[in-house]
Image 1 (cartoon, helix red, strand yellow):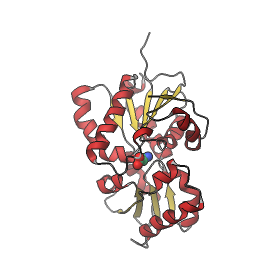
Image 2 (cartoon, protein in one colour):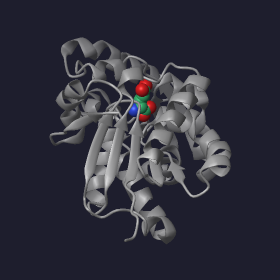
Image 3 (cartoon, rainbow, N blue to C red):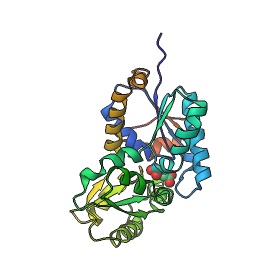
Image 4 (cartoon, rainbow, N blue to C red):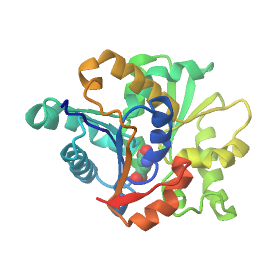
Length: 272
Ligand code: DGL
């Protein structure tokens, strides 16, 4: 019998579930394993070394579960760990496995969403300080000016389900104002953290109507569809039983309680 493998989807916590939602909607036929490193999240303020170590451990865990393709559905991990994993760990230890991130597919299409060529990027400190979006967007759209704003309070508010409470408004207004103060010509704001789509109702009310607020789920899902078309040798190995398994390094009961807010359906998780 042909050996098949699930697609692995990884995030520091819950945020990657927003990307998983879009991937599962576009590619419902495949098997998936989601891993949230909730016990060690948020990653946003950790050092490069720590984020790389944690991400590699989780990727290797997904490999051990049989995944041949892993998506880092986390901007922080994509910014801080992906390149080293792709350039060092995969060739040395896992030449037949692939790890993809969320930054490149976003950078490839961002030019379609701005008229003014000024794009705001909101993310964790790790993502912003890495300057990955500046570099990647510049490769595909050298005329686009990228203005960045780190939003270190947003992931903790979201992970604690406090983000839609009135108390969250101060930090939502603050980071949006700091971004908009950098330029009056921004017409597109990228939510460059997979947790942030949960803030959309509040962000829509804060930003002027002409601002295009971009989330990544659909963009990453489209990128994956395209990747699998170009890589039949990987696509052929993916299982097609429509399994969706969820694992967390944290408490499965807490994960189940929170995850549905991100994934849009009930989730039954297991301990890592
Ligand atoms: N969802 C992760 C991201 O996209 C968030 C990070 C964190 O753990 O701080 O950046």
